[in-house]
Image (tube, rainbow, N blue to C red; front, side, top):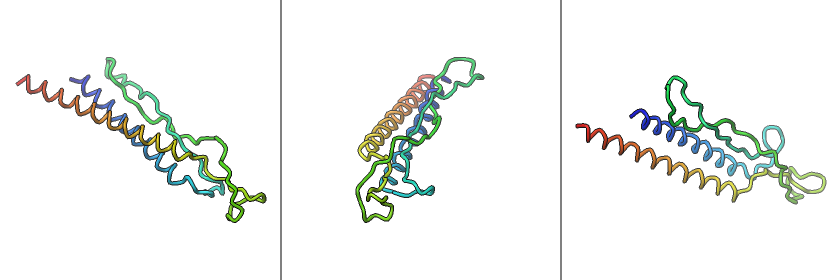
Length: 139
């Protein structure tokens, strides 16, 4: 039974990781057109780095360990440039630096995170049903 509970915990950690991916993608989309941030530079796209969650050494056996957010890093690709001479942030040549956010790419990332979230939710539901059936058989 503890293996099934470990699988539920692994699924729950995946739900947290996918939620983090969604939040970062939403933040990227929300700032896709901001030309000036707190440091006076445009917003930099962010990415979530996922890593395997370390196994519990006290468990004494191999169990599903899950996933965790290792870091949220900034994408260092150069800013896009757009010719807009009337913009207040335009340089001497009339170009404005805009965030390195690609809206279609963010939408695809959000869809992937949403589908992974749903898949993990379904897996947790199936494990829960398995546990309930096992408890019914034990009656």
